[in-house]
Length: 435
Ligand code: GLY
Image 1 (cartoon, rainbow, N blue to C red):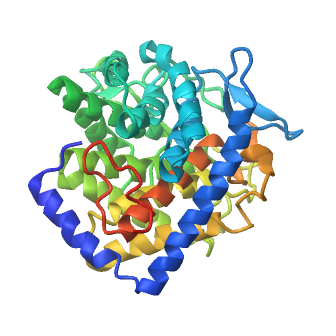
Image 2: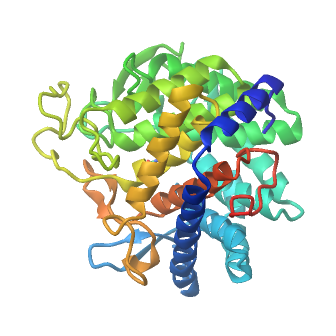
């Protein structure tokens, strides 16, 4: 990632202001991070100890009987397990976890050619992206460059966006539009920016910026919330409509989608330095942090509107079936990680607010209300995430991506406490530890 000079100066000023915690508080926060990273490493040793068999190789969740669910490498979540292993190996200087991270990452190699949907960014950046950042081996960067070119095959210049799914029959069985784009897709742009930088191929960058602009124009709503799914006309790129797939209603705000948006626009600002993307990230972050339905512990319900008195769902909604009060720890973990980065780009009181909100989320997630007991939770770190309530999938379970963003956020928190920038090139080995 290449930070422009003004962006570097801005971050340096923000870092100096941000982490003005008294020394005693800093020490106790470092100890908080150390304890959680050590706990997470013990849990992941357990998960990594069971050798994968067959095609479903990557630990993903637990089923209703609390048995381990693994997914094949083509699943959108496949990169998170190796990604978490990389982060924990690096922080804890743990050779066994490092070896596991490499072994599980290698399983992802064939996915550099995967064209089935847009998720190749999640899959490859969490696995190979962390490998390249923390312990690169010959050929790792080339895998990411190929993966980025693969992702561009889903981009259509007429629409100006990457198509998320090939076709999608929406949950109410009516829509069968042909160019669906989901907010999650913002996360996959990081692969394009990375590959643009290492290959000098500006087309990759153009595609990423075009997609982000299209999403900003049509997917982000004026109040800073977002549609989960937007359909475009493939002939001319015109907006057709916004819907939901995993949220409560078409006009509601699915919490993890909001988290993907906050994280995605923050990352696009990092990569471009373009103010409109920072504004988008802050608007989406403010929606999350100021929402009247956000509980005091700052872990949202699975949809901001599912449990909000007075909210009137749009015509198409799951209203009769799925008004439940499940929380989604994965949305909170991803938001915490995003807010820590955003706090280094925002100014003054706003930066402090983002930092403090992230800190509050991390402390909530690390409390017994969310964090597993030692040896429990099948080896996963966090409890109480939600895959998709409308589909009846993965309700109130551990999920590999909740763990990944929790651990990533802890690493980022440590870096900021040390007044270290989060992105200084490829190597941020152990700079998050107390010193
Ligand atoms: N990207 C799919 C999900 O967030 O559930």
